[in-house]
Length: 216
Ligand SMILES: [Zn+2]
Image (tube, rainbow, N blue to C red):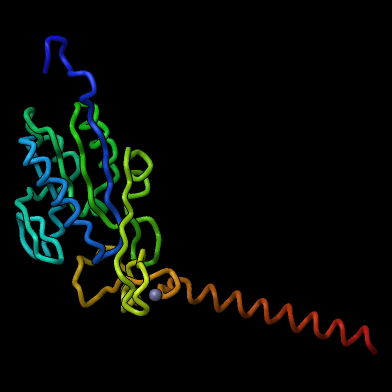
């Protein structure tokens, strides 16, 4: 802070790192947090209390890098827990938060805080996950990062659930339940495509019989 209150050029920001499972979102979040800490900025890390797959109070990436994180039950709880001296707020698994999360991060950014979030942009059906569509819209920067498709080795932007019959959106990330897939190998809409194929066959048959009638 200078003589004039806020320093020129110092304002808050909203950053989203998103992508499918196994894309390294949490590693990227941890990387940004470490750089802020090297710059001696006070950082607080939060995660939803639901994400207890590895550790209650740590952010843990699939490659087992970890950092202390405060589990919270709602997005408003983040507002209550951020200290005045905090310059950077990092939030992992942000897709699990309620819809108020976008209001919360806007408020933090308006207070001059840099907010960095990591989360799944899409659920296993390829649809926007929880509050992510809103967060991507209000973010200053968005990085969509890719995993590797387990079928063909191409860049993967989708999370594929091996057993799609279980229909709850929130299944906390067990490695063996999910795979990263490219668009071609994430067959979310198999049934729709079958229907499309059925109707286009029907049309072809109709056209066939019409042309036959004409030839008679
Ligand atoms: Zn593929």
